[in-house]
Each structure stands twice: as C-alpha cells, then as structure tokens.
Image (cartoon, rainbow, N blue to C red):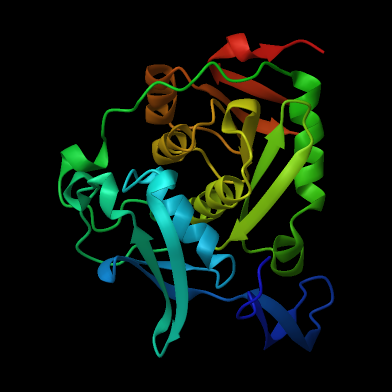
Length: 271
C-alpha cells in the first residue's frame, strides 16, 4: 500500500460469547472509510467512499474502467487532503480531444458498495461493452494457485475481516499485485490503476476478485483490457451476458476445492 492515512483504526467494543455468557472489553481493528473526490482538470466529477490508501491507483483505474479517458491521456494525478476527506485531481491531456460528457454522468456520491450511484439514465447504466482481446490461456491449476496466493496477500482483510480484494495474476497464476478496499468496485479500480501505472500487460493477465461478480465488475475488467475474470462468489445473470457479449472468460464460485466456468471456456485449459 502507498503511504497515506491509515486504512484501519482500533475501536473499543464489548464482546459476548454464547458458550459461557462472558462479556469482555476488546479492541478491534476496523477499516477506515473516507470520502474521496475525483476531479478532472479541477472540475469535480464524483465522490466515492473508499479506503484511504492507493488513491492515485484508484483515480487512474476509475478513469480507465469508467471510460472517462484512456490511460495514455492521463498526465498527472494530484492527491490532496481536504477537511472533508481526500481529493484526487486528474490532469488530462489537452491534445486528446476528450469529452467528459461521453462518460457516465454522476449527480451524487458513490457509496463503497455501489458502482453506479448517481448515474442519471438507464442507457448510461448498461452501456455497450467492447470486445476484449485474445488474452492468455490459463490452466485450472493456475487459477487455483492464484486463489491461494490471494488468500495470503490480503493484509488489510486479515486485520479487519471487512474488506474486498482484487488481484492481478499472470498466465501461470503468479499474483503480481493485490489491492484492497471497503468497496469491491474500488478494489478493482485500484488494481487496474496500479497495473497500468506499473506497465503490466493486461493481455497476459487475469483478475481475481473476492466479491460477488455483478455486471459492472465484468465491464471494468474488460475496460482494463483483461480477458479473464475470476470471482470467489457467484455471478449475476447480467454479468454472464455481458461477459459473453465482450468475449470475456468468466470464472466464478472459485474456492479451494474448484471453480465454475460461466463464459469463455476456450481460455481455460486442463492441468
């Protein structure tokens, strides 16, 4: 995690156990949740509730996965502390000829549990999805290897038991990056932003998420250029439909004892 405000804080509580009826005073580490404003060229765009870490990654990832602008158009991200939270101001290239009106318009803040808060119209909520590239072929063993590594790579989750994680794995199942957040969309945006900033190739990677797989998670993975998405929980029917429309491989219910392929099975090999 990058330096910044602590992503967790200790809070006192009283714990009761049914087995013996005992009550004891404890201190519990809990995830921090902060308002993060995203602005483009100093023009406010949206406020998300997020863990206060890896904010530059969040800003870059959100910009790309929400199709506000391509990564190449991002010149600089400036993060500042405000009385109400954090502000990430994204400077976009003037030569790119970008129009923020092409992105989803927002009229209110986005909650940590919501990827589409503030979207004004149904057309903006479910947009056409672009086809993904050929991508790698991965073995079932590689998926299971990455799942095991993800379990051990969640430092904030291990401390608080209240966050989501997203991981970037290569075709062999080696986890290259992990990002965590109180919001599943934020975790995925942070991961995409971190991968882009580090120059990792999305055409040779797959993404794992610890959350349920709703359709906007599929859209964000596709927008990041990744053709395989693996989720620990079940997908929605619309997530499968969007994966099929994009030609994306969707694997879900991925646990220690196996996984289920719902779309794009041609990229999954035995072994």
